[in-house]
Image (tube, rainbow, N blue to C red; front, side):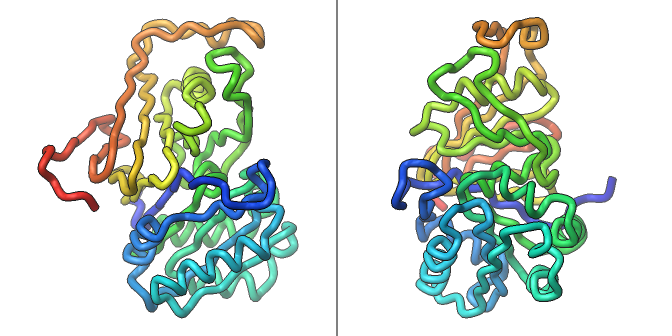
Length: 287
């Protein structure tokens, strides 16, 4: 397989500042520090940035939110692509924006809406092709937009029923990061259990649990660097010596032994293929 040339930036979301408690109705604001990394990776303030608020049930408000946020960082070439159906993903205007973008940013909300309305369309194909073949092309996403990057995508599930089989629901993602499963709002919403079950289902995949105001810059589909103020919890199921997920009935407590967990913070690095952590010295600068 040829080395992937593009960059992924999954982000764990932030405190809900929207109008409803349900995630799809929130503005899902991303702090300037994280967005500054997105802009830098995309080539700077002159980059063409396309925001896709498809996951949200308030796409106009969310789009305006990102227009203001990126403008505050000095960006001038920002477009909001409001895709609400597969047909919207096939318009010439939409395809032109995606072909010309240096960065595509997916908002938070309901990740299943992203794959239902974009998965398998011409936009999806262009995104995958450019991500694989173009150095400097960036796909970023917060919350639902981050979770949709995976192939095996968490589509929902109960955090309160942690470590119970059936606490996590899986769905097809966009397949940009096929070696991983991504969960977001990880610390604040207590999602340790549902990510554990996801990794129990797919122990050959790496689980990433992203805290809020925290993300990763992923180069070549492999080399991860943590950014932001929080933590990334990494689940490595390749070391499991006991995993009874396959034989359990739903609602039954699970057993997992020798699951490897790493807790990484700003500037720490992770190699997906080698499953190796590189932790910076204590005196290293915050990025």
